Length: 237
Image (tube, rainbow, N blue to C red; front, side, top):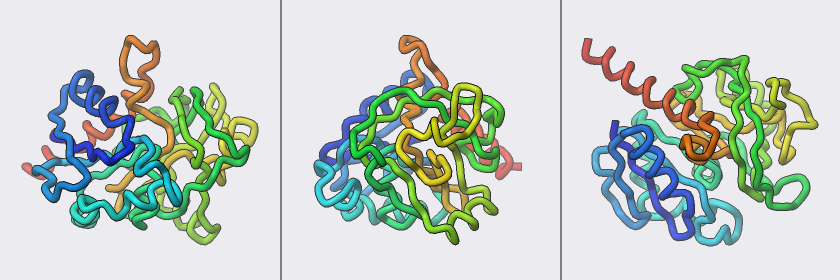
């Protein structure tokens, strides 16, 4: 599988993402500069975490207009796999490829720590192979991670299986006490209706290396890869 990792001015998780995909998951990876106009025939695109354009105006608001985003949006609209992590999630909401918005954390502070999330379903490529009863420990690092969407949109998302992950405790119990940023309904990640565009605030690429003592994030990325490979095999048959 060939991944393209888009690099914006201010990206700081691009190398982490490349390392995880290339060295740990043994996938082909190319870096795509934000001013490029060639996606290099990738199978999936990652918008990594960081502080694109210094988070001026609001997170992701300027990156949304980077030249490469025209091709990224067209790629997604054709059904291509696209995942945004942290700042990448914010960018995807700014483009309208994902519903909702990411607001300032309810404590108005930057939060950087390990939290727990649990899959809401197994309906999407990034959670298809995960155990719905097992919490995953994944780090977060953001100041604008409070997910919000109107109730009308949330209702549709619940029905369509568009909620990917929710914040929870170590046992998988979803509660207000274990919501680190005030996200509506403890939402930590969502996808679009076609289930080819994914966004999440936690950083799976930061929880994939054995040296870190936590590989729960690897399971999410492995699910994406396995789902893609299974779909490719089925298309050949």
